Length: 284
Image (cartoon, rainbow, N blue to C red; front, side):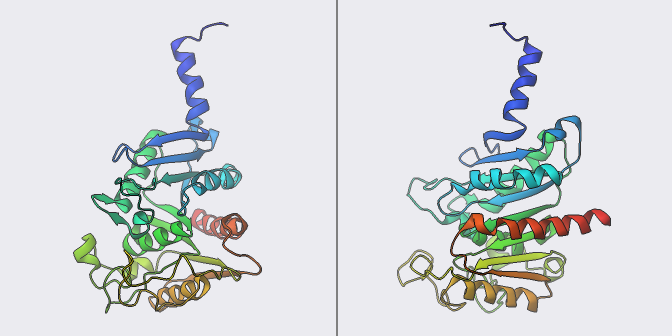
């Protein structure tokens, strides 16, 4: 077999590992955390892309599902897909849910995602100062809390079936409300910025299991009011939609008939929402 010259080998490796469905990369900001992308090959020729950050659920395997599930959308809509991977037990304690609440030990997951976006924007020579974000289940937890904290970074947010929600309640502390947002995260709530973000919320009307989402005394994330937004995911997401709308946010709400807790069966609705927002964004 003919040995490739250095330049040819580098070019082939970039084509295989850096474009299309990419390799898994460690974050330079925190190598404990990783990411996988779909990058349309046209980016190699300098084509400008928008960005969708798609956040996995508790099982983490949906990072690959979302990378591949949005690949065709990305190719035909000039949009890269970045899927963070936050391993279970990253602090050595077996914990599964820390990322959903944005902070865990010394990790600020929201800041790591911002660093991942900046790192990849530099790598692919793109302007991703604003991006869209989607997440389902545990990812829905992350996305709506990220949106509350960093609305200025988003041109759209799609929130899928979170088990628990943070309402825009100034009388209750995080994570049930936002009273101590600035003390905890160093940023105040800015409803005027949140109101500029087109928000999509989606849940199946048969997504009614409660065993994983009911907070009980003694649980790590139990606090007063933890279950007040409703018993089921549809009820809790409806409460979040009402809270966002009261703050002036334009919320598109999809309650999908006959669908349970199935991330892949909601992607068509998410793509339709994002395509509409992209069309409007690019027409400006």
